[in-house]
Amino acid sequence: MPTFIWGTPLSFVLADVIVRFKALTGHEVFFNTGTDEHGIKILRKAEEENTDTQLYVDQYALRFPDFTRALGMSEHNFIRTTDPHHKKAAQAFC
Image 1: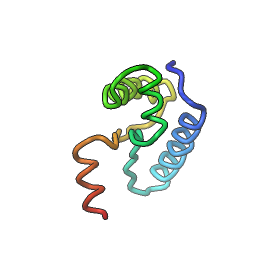
Image 2: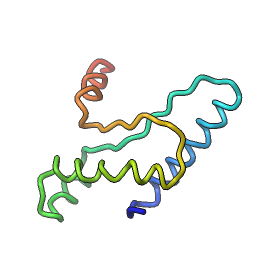
Image 3: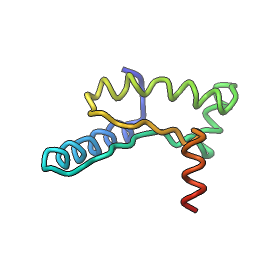
């Protein structure tokens, strides 16, 4: 399994538990997971690896399907904050 910070698996598993419970109790659910690809931490990691920021987040995002599969997560919609449809939705929200 890829190495991730501990907060990511914990928050994903907790969210998955809630989604499964709600679905089992008759609620309609739509499960979004994703990555926040902005901020100083991202910039610093890209610089540390001597790579372009967008390339760094692209490579990082490729690891998520294996990660969520290893956790046995239920079906979900994976969102990247750099996705054009996410940017458009965020702008419409503001």
